[in-house]
Image 1 (cartoon, one colour):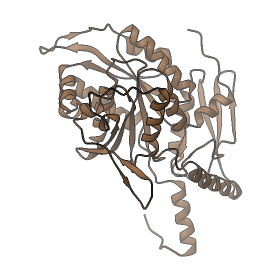
Image 2 (cartoon, helix red, strand yellow):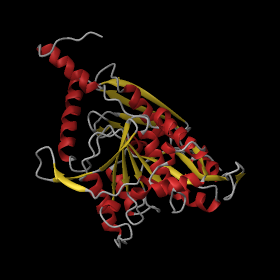
Image 3 (cartoon, one colour):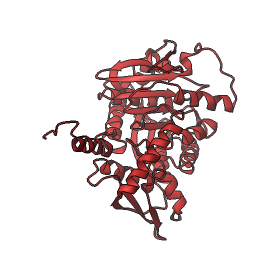
Amino acid sequence: MPPAAPPTVDDILGLLRGVIDPELGGNVVDLGMVPSVTVGQDGHVLVSVKLTISGCPLRAQIKKDVETRVGAHPGVTKVKIDWGEMTPDERSAVMTKARWNAKENASDTAVPANTRVLAIASGKGGVGKSSVTVNLAAAIASRGFTVGVLDADIWGFSVPRLLGMSDRLEAQKVDGSDRPMIIPNERRIGPGTLKVVSTGFLVDEETALMWRGLMLTKAVEQFLNDVRWGQLDYLLIDMPPGTGDVQMGLARMLPRTDMLIVTTPALAAQKVAVRAADMARRSFLRVAGVVENMSSFICDHGERYELFGRGGGQELANTIGAELLAQIPLEAAVAAGGDSGAPVAIEGDGEAARAFRRLAERLVNETIPPIALAGCSARMLDSIELTLGRKPATTA
């Protein structure tokens, strides 16, 4: 395969719009934190980033996000960041823009700016995408995180059954607002919490939803706009098959989304999954990695059988330039856990359960770690209040 062509500056700016300053609630490009981008013919990319203050504790987070998103482009061979500090006038302009963005975009999404968003996609049905979503969400929550699960597969919803949840969604007026907000259904998972929204909580399980594309998009928009998610560490979105209206709407509303591609070892599944990755990159979403589901069947006697062939996950990862993050075996316990609403990732001790837990650990510790909010704005506020004598100085 010939090397990919270097990206354009516009390509890089599109990718950088997925890098969010979690305190200012906007992306670094639109906030004016990226004064320049240079792209060489050798694929070397230089990104200039200006921080609001020197020693900003969010620098490491922004650095990782810039390198990860820009480095995911197949034509990029090296990413370098040139750091700078804003002048007082620039800082004032950024804060003004952040306040304006907060006002103008308040209705766009109710997902907090410091929430990591991960869309689980496949391009086709039948690869166990929903099972991966539910088990991964449960495994992350079991580590003490608050995890939202949005079942965006409007036609083929299955998340409620997989989690053993059936209560109807309710809407309430909160925080003195006249506008009712949908309250997610919650389930405790050890020290963590799952907050779940699905059309399966609105209709009976056997009811067919015969909605066209526009209705599907509106439903997902409402789940993002009108759900009182509260504080979330992660939001996992179970995507429908294909690359249509729902996927495009998500990319528009949550450009900071990372995408996890699920496939099987079968060549047919791998070829279709390539299209999901292509859609993600054309929408400037980062592909966080690949999960090969049903990689092999393990019988009750411990024998392993490769029912769907081998190598599809690694082939897909190589094709799209992403990492193969996990290989999940096909076990009866996974299906049984889904039928009973007890995800194997938290209830089981077999190889599949361990694979889900390792995947959660890798995502949380390496691929998409949670965003800490000990940021620049908080330090700036402390400095102002100390100067005005409104609060006592604290010692470390």
